[in-house]
Amino acid sequence: MPSTSPKSAQLQASPIRKLAPHARAAEARGIHVHYLNIGQPDMPTPPEMIAALHGLPLNRLAYAPSEGLPEAREAWSAFFTTWDVDFSPDQILVTSGASEAITFTLAVVAGGGGEVLVFEPCYTNYLSFAAQADVRMVPVTLEVEDAYHFGSADRLRARITPRTKAILLCNPSNPTGTVYTLEELEAVAEVAVERDLFVICDEVYREFVFDGGPVRSFTQFRDLADRIIVVDSVSKRFNACGVRIGCMATANRDVLDVALRFCQARLSVATAEQLMVVPMLTGGRGYSERLCVEYQTRRDTVYAGLERINGVHPHRSEGSFYTMTRLPIDSCETFAVWMLKDFERDGETVCLAPGEGFYVTEGLGVDEVRIAFMYDAVTLRRAMAVMDAAVAAYPARRELAAGVSV
Ligand SMILES: Cc1ncc(COP(=O)(O)O)c(C=O)c1O
Image (cartoon, rainbow, N blue to C red; front, side, top):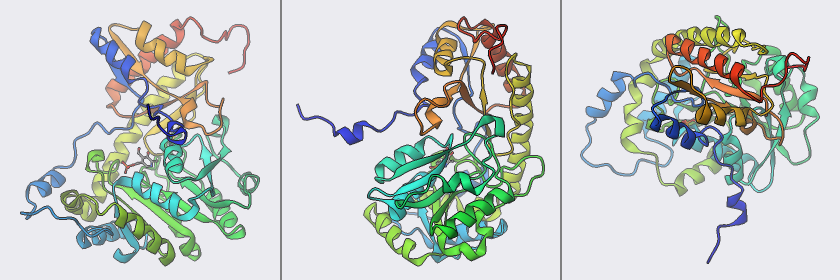
């Protein structure tokens, strides 16, 4: 029998989705599962987008240009302007979500064995994108005790080698909810210039900043323009993950030229979907601002729920719609499986994303979980109460009474 290639077999299974069979089995037993593991927005896609889809003046779904339809590139450019980010339409390539934009960008700047610095815990798919692009992700490890902030430029410098080509920055962060401070962004900028690196800015959660904090794009460092590549998406800000529209944007002509060849090799992005996002990109700022208010309420609910769990010392997520926390439990993966297989409270249980999968470094994050705020506050309150009961009932709970530090 021919076999799959050893390299492709190394691609990790999604840590977010791998508990799904246990969750389905719990549901088959009649248990109600609260899915706190996945960042799939629960709110409806804006009617403007659906109406735009129905109203498209199309009688032939031809290939779109590889760089994206002019209408879509103009709409992205207009969208960026509302957030004080300057990219002209010809500096934007429309992609199948931010996922494709990141994969192309990694390949363009570091493909063929280059290294890219990334803060861990990180968005898990970065590792799979990097594997596809033949890029090595080099982690800068952040600590829950620092609310996953990194503080100083030296943390980055310490991980740079002659093969380092870029720093990948997800701000606000999935999975931690960290919004990097101005000083931290300045540190990234300083190191990028000093070591001649690109900065890949994953800003798919850009405007989801809580507590009135400033929405900062890395593009504010205008003198770094040629080093900056922004990746973006409609998925989260417009509750439209299934539309699969994103983009990469840069002022760097060489990057655009090479990236366009990747775009040409996959021919084009779906024509109708590029057009259906135009109304929200050009007029949707108020919509995503309202979403941010809702996510802040949910953040408050999750934070309050975590605070009530004995042995948990949560940090207050600053943005995106996630938080990570440490639980007083040795293996959160075993705990998450146990909650689905062996635990229920009044017919309910919770599905969590174990922290390990968000780390590049093996062995880290075993006592952490990521929580996504994908239910209204009432449901989240119930889910947090279920989690509290589960932590208390878990047989292998770390022995707090014995003074084990958590
Ligand atoms: C940080 C981050 N980047 C990129 C993506 C991919 O987004 P898209 O749906 O646009 O491919 C996600 C999706 O969850 C994400 O959280």
